[in-house]
Length: 137
Image (tube, rainbow, N blue to C red; front, side):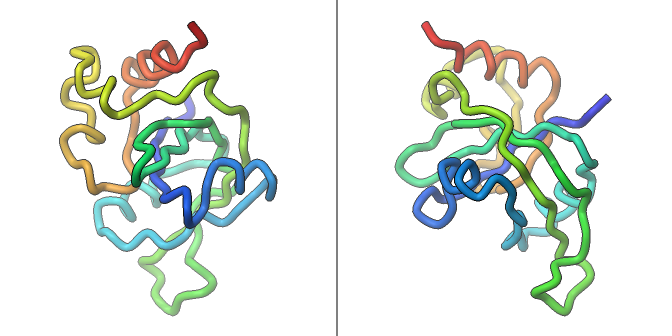
């Protein structure tokens, strides 16, 4: 079974719209040791929520890992890994952090416990609930 993840990005730096425009990108810039551990655990074909941090604070789209983790070619440190991502589809509506915080089905989710972490696994039940929250009403 494919893994599921959440990747945060500051939309002013690189947004969901940028990923859709580019059709594929190298997801780099991760430096936190726990986030790097999660990034290194990704596999080709894994699904990813793209989450806009900053003022928006919402999951906005689903992407797919198009190339498994590899050493960042721009860095001289094998611990710094990157993955290639490609967009799959936008969420019908953003799944906002404020709504996630009030949802008891998301209690314990790393996004709520470790708000500064930029890469995290998404358990199956949490993935399903975020998709439900993002469904068009």
